[in-house]
Figure 1 (cartoon, one colour):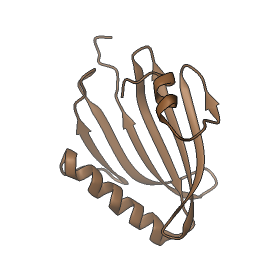
Figure 2 (cartoon, one colour; figure 1 turned 45 degrees about the vertical axis):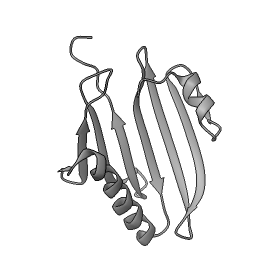
Figure 3 (cartoon, rainbow, N blue to C red; figure 1 turned 90 degrees about the horizontal axis):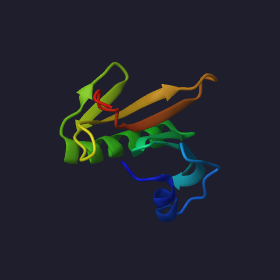
Figure 4 (cartoon, rainbow, N blue to C red; figure 1 turned 120 degrees about the vertical axis):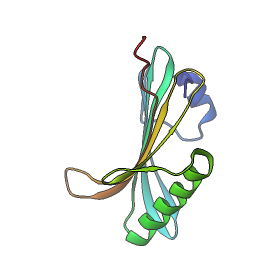
Length: 130
């Protein structure tokens, strides 16, 4: 969080499909558990730098989806503690040096076409003082 778009692109191996001062988008396909998985990543920037990262994962297999959810949940619980359970999501909260809070949510979703996907979101909301 807080990185500017140029610094982020310099450290990323993927090529963005959209890139400007306020957003970078990546759309990549990779293999996970013998399943071809589409990853859509959206990174949002403001005057203070990167403040939101959203990764949507589309799998063809419920087994791969469950494995990804379990793995990511475990990886987030280790540094951030037990999540708060929401209706269809888990939420972790941590502090950042540039702001007070970063909210991390992990959920199963459906798009407008009914396709299932996993959504991972890091959001650093602006402090009320700004």
